[in-house]
Amino acid sequence: MPWFRRSKENIATTPERKELPEGMWEKCDQCGEILHRTELEENLFTCGKCNAHFRIGSKEYIEILLDPRSFKEHDRKMRSTDPLKFVDSKRYRDRTSEAIKKTGLNDAVRWGTGSINKKPVVIAIMDFSFIGGSMGSVVGEKVGRAIDRAAEKRQPLIILSASGGARMMEGALSLMQLAKTSAKLSRLAERNVPFISILTDPTTGGVTASYAMLGDINIAEPNALIGFAGPRVIRQTIGRDLPQGFQRSEFLQEHGFIDVITHRKDLRETIDRLLSFMVPTKR
Amino acid sequence: MSKSVLDFEKPIFELEEKLDELRRYADNSDIADEVAKIEKRVHQLQQNIFSNLTRWQRVQLARHPDRPYTTDYINLMSEDFIELHGDRLFGDDKAIVGGFARLGSQSVMIIGHQKGRDTKSNLYRNFGMPNPEGYRKALRLMRLAEKFNVPVVTMLDTPGAYPGLEAEERGQAEAIARNLLEMSSLRVPIVVVIIGEGASGGALGIGIGDRILMLENAWYSVISPESCSSILWRSWNYKEQAAEALQLTAPDLKKQGVIDLIIPEPPGGAHRDYERIAQILKEVLLEELKKLMKIKPEKLVEKRRAKFAGMGEWAG
Image 1 (tube, rainbow over the protein chains, first blue to last red):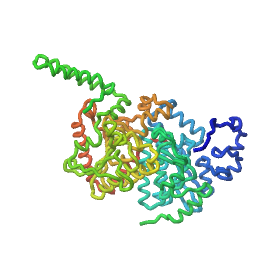
Image 2: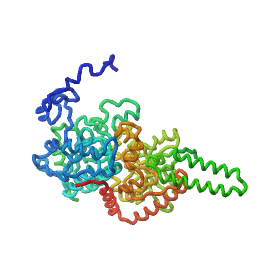
Image 3: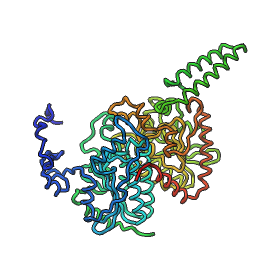
Image 4: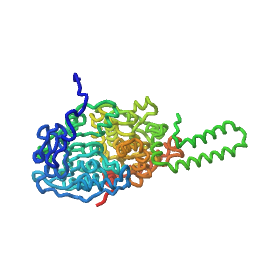
C-alpha cells in the first residue's frame, strides 16, 4: 500500500501535447516515449525504450518473418456474404465494406506459402485492424485451407493470431469455425507436420479457444493480452480488480501455456531454430 | 415441482387453473361439456402461443427454471448410471457431470453441463458454467469410453464457460481448444444434444460430434443475446433484437447447417412433461447410435471432420 495516492489522474498531460506531426512521430502507449517513425520501423514497431510491442498487421509480419518476396498469397479475394443479414446499430454488410475500405484487406486473415531461411512454410497471419481480428466464416475457411495445405504438402504450419474472438455478426456459424479449424488441426497432427502458433496482442475468445492454443509450440510476443474471457468481463464477474500482469504473455507462460516469449526481432530466428528440430516425418 | 411461469405462459396457466377448479367442484356430469370445451381452448391457446414464439421467448424457455437438466434426462432415460468424477489433474467440476449409463441395452458415456435448481444447488453447480477441469474431466471420460468402444452422448446446457480469474490461470481457452481437437479424432460415435442453453465456446467445448441434435426450444450461438446487446448496442436493453439478429433457435440453426435434427418438445415445452421429453430423446438417441455404431472408426472420424469443415458461408 502506498502512503499517499495521486488524487487526480493525468495532471501533467494535456490533449494538445499528444498531437504530433502527421506520420513522422509516434508516442509509445506504454512509456510515453516519442518515437521517430524510421526508428520505430527499424525496431520492427517496438519501443526502443520500454520494449512495448506495437500492434502491426499481416503486411509487416510477412516482411518480418518470411524470406523477401517468398510470400504467395492464396484466396485473397475471399469475402463475407453476411449469411444472417445481420443488423445491430449498423448493418454488418456496411461494417465489412468500411473495414475493407479502411484496411485494404478483404477479411481478418491472409494465408499463403513462403519460406523462412529457405525452408518452405504455410502461413496464416491475422489482422486485428479488420473488425477486431474477429473470426467468421472467411477467417475459419482461410485458416482451414492453410491447415489443409500444410497437411497435404507436409510443410510446417505457422499461424499468427491477433483477434478479439469469434465474429458475433455471423452467429453460430462463427462459433463453428472453432470446430472447423480444430478438426483440421487434428488431421494435421496425425501427419506429424509441425504447427507453430504465434500469439500477439491481443489474442482472446474463440481464437484462443481453438487454433491459437493448439500449437506444437506456442510462441508469444512480450506483454500480449492472451485469454479466453476479456478482462472487463472477468472483473465484473468476480467483483474485484485483476492482478498486475494478469492474462499477459508472461502470466500465461508462468501458468504453463506458452513455450517461448520472443521479442519481435528474434521471432524469425526462433521459428527457424524450432523448425530445424521438427522435421515432418513419414511413418 | 415448483412452478415458475413466464409472461407469455400466463394465459395458459390461468385457463388451466380454471379447468382444475371446475373439475374439483364438479362431480355431476352436466358440466362435462364445459370441461371439454375449456380443455380444447387450453390446447388451442397453447398452440397459438407456441407457434408464434419470438426468438427471445425461446431463449426464455431454454432458461425456464423448471426445464429438465442433464441429470433429469439421465435419470429418466437410463438405468445403471454411475457418475465418474474428476479430471485427474486438478479437481472435480460440478458444472459438468458424466458417467457410464445404459439406454435400454446400449451402453453409453453420458456427459453434460449441469445447472442447479435453487440458489444453493446453483452455487454448487456454478450455474452450469464450467471451469477448465470440467472440460478436462469430459475429455478424460471420452477417452475412457473410446478405450472400451462405448459411444458418447453429450448434453449442452450452459450460459457459458466461467469467466473467472482461476479459470484463466488454469487455461480455460486451452481446455476448450484441446477438447475440440481431441473430439475431432475420437474413434467412437459422439451424439451431441443441445437441451437448453448453448452459449458459445463453453457449450462447444463438449459439442463436437457425428450428429448434432437440438431440442425445439433450446438456443445455440456464438454469444448470449444479453452480451451481444451490451457489446454491439452498448446497452443491455437490446436483448430481444440481439436474439433476432443472432438467429439462434433450432429452426435457424437447421437452416444454417449447424445442426442435423430438431427434437420436438411436448405441448408447452419440455418442462411441462419430463417423462415425455425424456422418452422422445431416448428413442432418437438409440436410433442415431444404432446407425453410427455400424460405421468404421476411420470413416466416422473422417466424416465428422468433413461435417465441420463444410460449415460457414463465404464468397470468392
